[in-house]
Length: 408
Image (tube, rainbow, N blue to C red; front, side):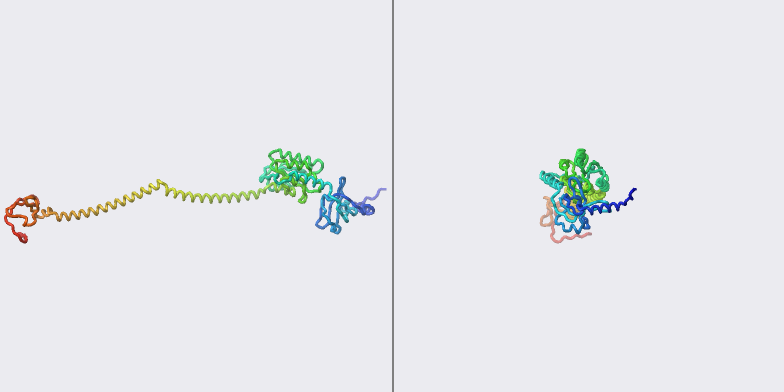
């Protein structure tokens, strides 16, 4: 006779009753290392306890965890006390922790801290060894899983921000035993190409053991010896790995890494247009200022130019010559007028000119002018100079007194 099929919820309820009836599972202490710890906003804590061979889900409700007196986080080794039961909705069994105490640091976390101290002492984390990221990359290399969300986020962000850039993807495992080797091979391949400007390596978040491939020493030394700048984008914002410390820059997430290595093309174009406008205005201002200066210098050169000065002096000489000519002409005209006046006066006073009017000039034998009767004597021979000749006369009689002329 076949049994009646059970519903899923009935199976989960049955298993839950079995767990509840087991004296060991109803009050159990479990020692392990905390992994994938999450403190929910509701106050409840969700995490896993793990060792070298297995993992156990755990939940510690708010009323129970408010008395915990130490910091719960990944890598801490603890002893949790509670009971095993089934979460019926999901069909998962888990440890419901009632109390918890610290047991020690887990071996994975201890190995992480020891490697971190050693590499830091060697100088692999020193800022002076960090390379500058390129401002405008032509090619971006990505070393990550080809199937995870990380590669999709990286490609989406890069193509949105800077679509003209080329992306070279080297797919690798990002967890497991073979992951460190594949990651190192991918990094070396992209570094040796010579045409890759910057490399992103990483994965999405996870527990400490899931991220532990990026805590491998070989990856750390590969990153340190690379010529190409590299950005580590491993895990979520609160997760750190050795690769983060060695890389030239650490990004909180793969999406953040894609934003870091790419400028935003739209903003670049806007900035270029604004810069061009400012540059154009500056050039126009400088050109106008120089035109003003050149015009001023031209005027100055023209003013101080020897040829210009000679022309100025020649013009001044012409002006002076014209002024001198005018002065001379005026002077000559004045002197001519004076000479003419003097000539007229002389002509008027010239005794010879009186000859034209019928007068004569009496000369003695020595040709001296006789102008008084006292200078002559009777029978003296005289010369009478008239207009058209000389008359020689002899003095017959001399009479003194007033001269009068009677015209009959």
